[in-house]
Length: 94
Image (cartoon, rainbow, N blue to C red; front, side, top):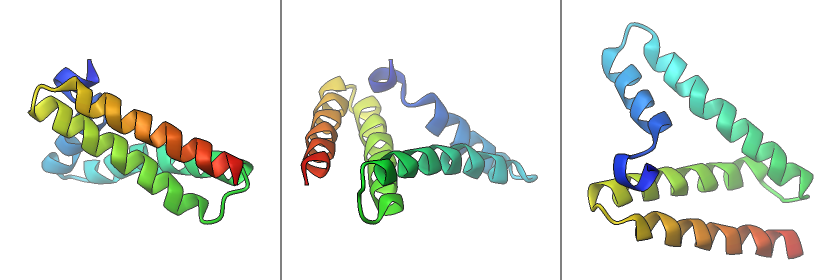
């Protein structure tokens, strides 16, 4: 679904930012909470710079979702998620 229609969270965030009136802060909160949660997972793994890793994770997924939707090519999202899985596995081993 995400590869065809885009990420619902990303789509909602763009709409909230476009409408202004303070809704942009709500959009930021959606992603901020997701980044915070992801950073905590990297912190638990013992990674250095957990917030940077979290931003890389979320931005890669969002970018891949956008490209997969734009090009109607779900393989873009699948391949990027697989790449992220390998990356996270390598962090867990180090």
